[in-house]
Amino acid sequence: MNSQRTRWAIFASLFALMVISYTITLKWKIPTSPYIQKSYEFINSLPPSSVVIVSFDHEASSLPEIQPISHIILRHLFSRNQRIIGMSLFAEGTAIGYQTLNKLANEYGKKYGEDYVFLGFKPQHIAAILGMGESIKQVFPQDYLGNYSTEIPIMQGVENYQQIAAVISLADGDRTVQWIEYTGKKHGLKILGGFTAAMITTYDPYLSSGQLYSAIGGIVGAAEYEGVLGLPGKGNRALLSQTAAHLFIVLLVIVGNIAYFRKRRGEK
Image 1 (cartoon, rainbow, N blue to C red):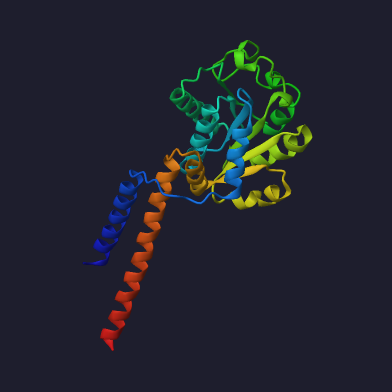
Image 2 (cartoon, rainbow, N blue to C red; image 1 turned 90 degrees about the vertical axis):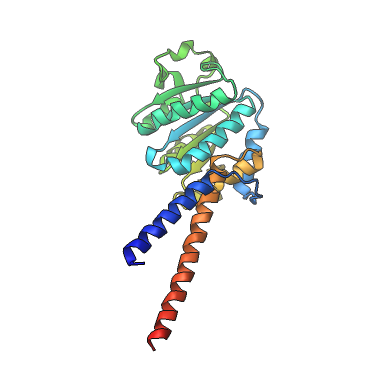
């Protein structure tokens, strides 16, 4: 087999392995890290009908990692009958947030406007975060669909952060930092985060200092949360697919090294 055919065989095998493993849902025991447990226990501790802001502060390119996190967080919130105000500080996250909220709300029979609402995107994100501390309705006079915020049932009695139980920022960058700096300590608001694996170390200082209450990092974090909630989903499947791909690559490295040393021995 020439080198080109070998490459095709390797890539085709890797692709097939990842696709097949992604379709399998395994009920394997994944150890729960302290911050996943902390996020889970916090949401469990909220009284029913608490109002939580979920901000989709990410772009489409990070969906493979962020989407499993957003799905399991929303499932947990809806299953506990919490009310959700969705929004985005990224223009690209607006449509993603609206579709994700609707999809998960439908699973739990939740009604738009009463159990959840999506306010949409607001540019000048720092000004928006600060302004919501005074009046959420002034920053978002209308929701994503054009309904007046003053007429939406879930917004009745919700004026500013004083009526918000927590902010959950699902981010692939540093937008969560602004939530921490301009709302956390100033308004005594708990900030939870869901991040890509590459970003989780960026938030370590905020976690260590307690400014960021807890965090869910990447596919592993989503799979852990699904495990503790008992709802295996995209995180579980993606972790299995990722693990299978890594094992396949390790196997290729071993086989390649054996072939190399056998060839050298033959040449001697």
